Amino acid sequence: MSAAAEAEAAAVESLPDDVVAEILLCLPPHPSFVSGASLVCKRWLHLIRSPSFLRRVCAFHRTPPVLGFFHNYRDLPSFVPAEGVPGRNRMDGVDDGGDARMFIDCRHGRALLRRYDWADLVVWDPMTGERRRIAGPNQKMQGGGAGTSRRSAALFCSCDVSGGGGDQDCHSSPFHVVVVFTGGCRAFACVYSSLTDAWGDLISTPAPLPCELCDTPPALVGEASYWLSYGGLILEFQFGSQSLTLMKRPLEMLADVRLVRLEEDGLGLAFIKDSTLHLWAREVADDGAPKWKWIPRRAIELDKFLPMPRVLTGKWCGEMFVSISGFSEDGNVVFIRTLAGVFLVWLEALKFKKMSDPLYMMTVHPYSSFYVPNGMGSSLSFFILCCLVLFLANEKISSVFLLVLNPVLCVSLWFRSESK
Image (cartoon, rainbow, N blue to C red; front, side, top):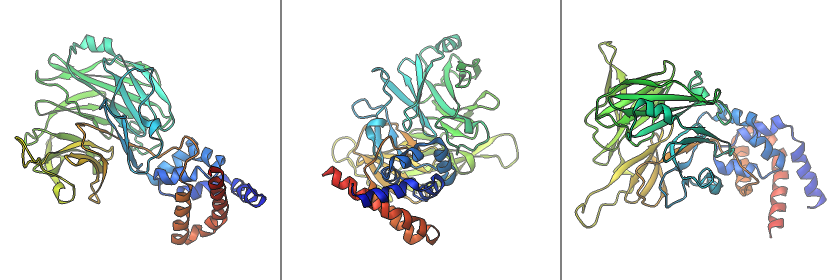
């Protein structure tokens, strides 16, 4: 590097952390921008990876972007990234000595996985690499008479149970895992706390005989988690009261039903009928009685904007196959599967992006997080372009970008020359 370039790089290094942090906070939270910024110098990389900066990013942007989805389809890498998300290898599943694991839930940047026999579970943070193995509550399950019934689980972060609204940084915060199952004529739950590293007492409620949990992810609304059950039922676990409740759902929704968190922390149901996505909300009955009713909220005609080819031959010739594969944590993004592929759909803007070719994936687990680079990235030119856009659009920070942009260009040219 020339003397002039070294001087410019030193100028970047000399900027106070609070000034650099303010610059970085103005960038969109898309991974391409974050990865590009991490290229400027090691000090910027360390700042971006610091827990304090992650908390500021979370407070500033509030809603993390959807980086892609995990799935349990064995023949493919376990993570399918959204466009522009680098570092796929680090997301392809937790390295656990060759033990095969299945994804159950994703919450606030962490994923919950289990072994096939539920002997243990793992809470994994793909961004930081941190993982925690938890021995499963198998003895408690056997005591409840679970037999061979289907089980499920949900991940609660500290902000979910402390009134934080689910918008805090959770990369290193305490967490709880709730395992639910059915056995005989009862439904059961057991709660693990990372603070005590222990499972609590078994919680149960009466259940009809056909009650069996569906193989779909839970929905977290406030301090409650919800699971679909066969027989037109929904299982609710209230963390505050440590109680289980079974409620009925509308019988109009017989197949391809998903639970989803709607606006204002409400519980919703989503289903597809005749290529239309229907969203229903649970509301208090008008007569003020202590019961709920389900109200249709929205109907989205997916065939108006999504590619939906029809079957060309065979028994189902002329039919359009479309199904729900998963919802993001906040309910604003849905993954739809058609014969053309798996699509990420933004419900507010009614825009979509293709995530993968047609695959037999009944369920995916959307992963949302503010991106944390694990090393020097490869998108510096994109970061420079972002600086130029912000410089032109925001006069208040233009002087700061004038100060930073020239050294960044020098560093970019040096990296290009070194790579040749």
